[in-house]
Amino acid sequence: MNDADWGHEVHAGARRGGSRHGPHIHSGADERYLRRALALIVGFMLLEVAVAFAAGSLVLLADAGHMLTDAAAVLAAIVAARLAARPPQGAWTFGFKRAEILSAAGNGVTLLVIAVVIAIEAARRIAHPPPVAGLPVLAVALAGIAVNLLATSALARANRSSLNVEGAFQHVLTDLYGFIATAIAGAVVYTFGWRLADPVASLVVIALMLRASWSLLYDAGRVLLQAAPAEVDVGDVRLHMLQLRHVQDVHDLHVWMVTSGLPVLSAHVVVDDDCLSDGRTAQLLDRLQDCLVGHFDVEHSTLQIEPASHAGHEAGAHL
Image 1 (cartoon, rainbow, N blue to C red):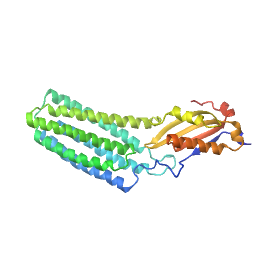
Image 2 (tube, rainbow, N blue to C red):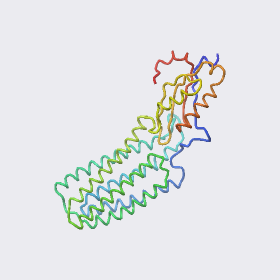
Image 3 (cartoon, rainbow, N blue to C red):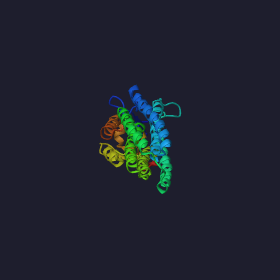
Image 4 (cartoon, one colour):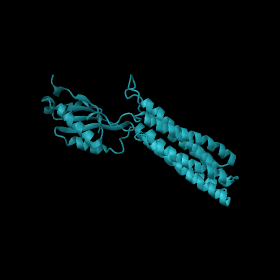
């Protein structure tokens, strides 16, 4: 029985010296940056909650809620990266690489819930504005700007190819903008006594939280629903593969993300019968993979190479 009698399923792993899509926290230095940011955020968050209740400030409480999600995002980045670094075993053929995606989705949901809770309270305070101590709000907000600048600087040094690390960075960056809005509200209340400045500023924070929530949920959803990476045009992938000599058709083409920075591709490639019979399959596989790596940065691919006569056995085939 020769090669022409069978389709050949060939796995193409990382080439050219190894994959560029390794674990997202590559060294102890990255984790130190994350832990440093976490300590800054948690310490300041506790101080902010205390001052928010003492001053009766909703915008400070909103910022504290946002900082809680910041802390969760940074902590999740550390935990999820450790899980993702575990090797595949047993039923977990990709290991726990998607732990960071689940964590990112959880952070997005948390941001959304907190934004809704704060929005309800903001509406109540706009209708009946309570007294707010402007000076403590201004002082805490200025301190928050400084703390968030330090935390943002620390996270910027970590590897942001991970959706979790990037999510944590965006959380803290959004909180920085929120503290700027809080400082403005505190200054207005202290200078002019306008109580509505506090709940109005909290609406700005809510808008930033919703924006960050949508971004995290959208990116995590694309991975969980196995959409192709945003930078990969599936039609373009098929076209490039079809341009190779001896390739007649490409079907059952799937491109998805296992986790941040780890695109995966599978496809059935129909080739000339003589390509299988004369032993040129390996050379064709090399060219196919060079095409995928060189043009689309897809290093992990599984290709089933089959003759045109195999089409009768492809009852479930699709584009």
